[in-house]
Image (cartoon, rainbow, N blue to C red; front, side, top):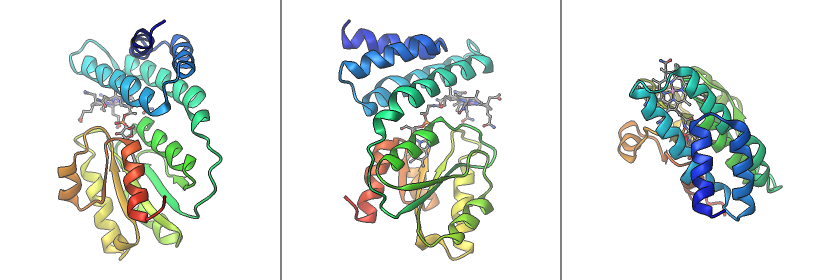
Length: 217
Ligand code: B12
């Protein structure tokens, strides 16, 4: 089967929330030589965007979003994540990741976590719906923490990313860490507006930028 057909089939399987088919097509894509980055950026993320649009139009309901998210999660955890585990040597650099208060979307944050871990970072995952004070407390608790990653998927919760930065400033911790703000709605303008450091609208690009800022290869 051609690569284009396989990509289309995986895209459809995620939209239809069919984990069995999605897993099988993802395996085939990997065997055809497509790498993790391409599968996430060219197939899985666009599929979730389409699912979001269908929800917005009233063609899909929450149960459909959950089914698609489950198919996505299984493909990432079972087929893609094992291919990221590079056995990288620990860099002694710690990152704290979480989805901000009021927001329970976690797929993007989990991808970012897997990518950073595969590059030798230790990632403390605070989960979802995390208040600003929690991020700041954790940063305060360990000297080796150099990166804070904040995921927000909704226009209504992005503002929480700014609140975390304010809380870090209030405790004199802002200059200690690189702040990466992730999630589909995040833009470079938003990054500048709230005084973050790195735009995490794409986890792969964000990792590269963070490594540059930290001066590690
Ligand atoms: C799946 C999904 C859900 C699932 C989430 C399941 C889960 N376990 O995560 C469920 C069903 C739970 C859900 C619930 C809701 N959802 Co929803 N959801 C989505 C959907 C379809 C896909 C999101 C997703 O996972 N995308 C795939 C991932 C991989 O993409 P990503 O997160 O952007 O991540 C990439 C980058 O951004 C980056 N990244 C992300 N985070 C981070 C962090 C760091 C540190 C770094 C470096 C990088 C990084 O890395 C990733 C790879 O490059 C989106 C549609 C969309 N366009 O985003 C709607 C969407 C976000 N949801 C929406 C809504 C409205 C809701 C609900 C309010 C619905 C309701 N009425 O209950 C609730 C909100 C609950 C809450 N309080 O959070 C709206 C938000 C609209 C807005 N206001 O902005 C959207 C946009 C759908 C729509 N078009 O209307 N949702």
